[in-house]
Each structure stands twice: as C-alpha cells, then as structure tokens.
Length: 199
Image (cartoon, rainbow, N blue to C red):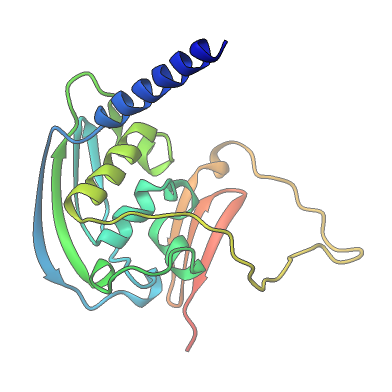
C-alpha cells in the first residue's frame, strides 16, 4: 500500500516537472526598447493606447510592460489596461513598467493555437495569454501573484420605483468605443465601462 502511494506521488511529480519544462513560449521574440512616453491621462498610468496585432501565429505591439501584463492576465475582455490601471487592480512593480515602451514582434511555435486580434481582445486566446506571461517572466523578469484586498466601493442599485432597463439585443449589443471631449466609453453592451476625466 505505501509502495503504491509512493509510486503515484513520483509519477505526479514527474508529470508536473515535465509540464513545467514544456511551458509554452514564443518560438522567436524580438523586443526593442522605444524609450519613455509622457502618458495619456485618460487611459490611466502605464497605458499608452498601444494596440496589439494578432495574425495567426504572429504577435506585434508597441506598448508598455504594464499593458502587456494586463493582456497576459485576461483583462482584454474587461476594458484592458485602462480598466486595470484606473481600477487600481495592479500594484507594485518598478516604475519603468508604466513609463517605458517596447516594440514586441513575436511568433508562436508551429502547431500552437492561432488567433486573431479580435479573439485576443475578447479574451478568447488563452494559450497566447500564457505565452505572453512566460515572455514577461523570461525577458522582463516580471512575475505576479494574486491576493484579495478589502476596498471601499459603491453599489449601484435601482431606486424604489426607478427605471426597469432591459439588455440590448442584436446589432446594438456589439462592442463599442466612443470618445468624447471629456470621456471615453468602451465595452460590450449592456456592460459599458465609462472613464471620465475631471477638470
């Protein structure tokens, strides 16, 4: 009985070790520093408005490591970098991850899942997110851990006798981005994240 348990544990450890050695990574990745940027207040600290291009096995972008971190951890479908920055969901790290921009040109290995920019931005590229996380750890020496913190907040509730809203349907339910003089709105209806600048 004890001998059988020991062999199962050894087998599990071997499988875990081999899985860690085969962690998905870009086949080729060129990362070039582009220098610092002054920041765009409406997007939040560390968010430069850089837009990734994903075409089958090719990933290219000019942005900050902060934005890469948000994409690598699945925040694309929730508003991406701005959502994380303005919401204060990422703390710590060196200052340069928010101020320095890099150009990343990379290829995923043959046989890995292929994606489009649309799928990536909708959070439908889980393998690519893992590959970006591994690149951040390997090339930028950045790693994250998750923790739960208590925070003050507001609950938005319908008042007594207030309006009864229904979710949008069809064409109007598509993803939208609207930029106005003092605001930017983005999201997939009926979930809209509204970010406003205050003067």
